[in-house]
Length: 384
Image 1 (tube, rainbow, N blue to C red):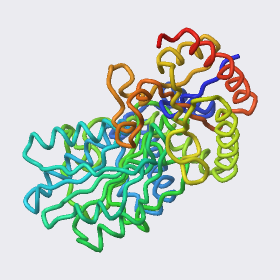
Image 2 (cartoon, rainbow, N blue to C red):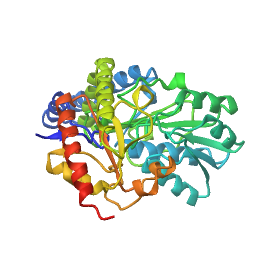
Image 3 (cartoon, rainbow, N blue to C red):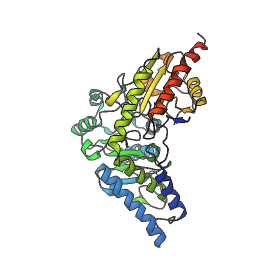
């Protein structure tokens, strides 16, 4: 039996999405900048995509910019905004538990002369609005807070944060990395005072290498990729039409059945958490239930190294993660786990399980039975 429980890293493409991508690559393959019919066909896909995404977010079509995914969207949001607004100030704010695409970009901006405040989080991985309020200054130009944490599934009070920022100074740009939250929740930037929103298609059963950035038309932002002037000069390069069309179809499918799918995933998560709690010395990190993301469970297993447990499960056909897939090939300690105060001896004993619309109760039961068998066995062979 094969059980894929690493959906925070990437998701299986919907069959209909894969078929559409193939069709465009082999039949409707024109360059959308070309003036002939093949180009017009491709341009139609782009127009339709903007219509769908804008309607989903309740924003204007011209505020949607196609990118190569979450990382590029985050880079453009931070670098483009910082450079465009540096005369107004050079102070940026983010949190200690952001994705590397945010944290490493902030480190780059520090080298360019910007000052960054990294907000702490509580033991559940949630930002305290009062900490943000204390950090805001007259020279603050950008605040970046993720919607949903990719490692422990903590949810940030985005609407409250957006309201707080704009009450302090309407000119401060608020960026939200929604790579893990989009497709799990309904997000409306205008209502939540979000100026920039990053999304990646491969987290919602779309293709890899495609995403978008919502950009409030009222903010100042500079491009970071130059060339042929596509997308009104904000992001040059021939648009990835197959990817954009595939992402659009994935968005339509996900949001068409969102409520029932998410409720079912929450039920699977609740069942998994209650069942796994029966294993001695297993700790669930962060909040559970509706106070957390529906699809992410972080488990610390005392006495068993995460890499060992990961490969033991893999031998049984169960695929999980030891943390963020974007950093899993590097021997580093999770900044998120450190920020929420996980015991030092558990930092290297933490596994992430992440579910999707394809996850079944049968797969959860199979995983639980293997955890019941494998963890005591691995502990028996652990040196003390």
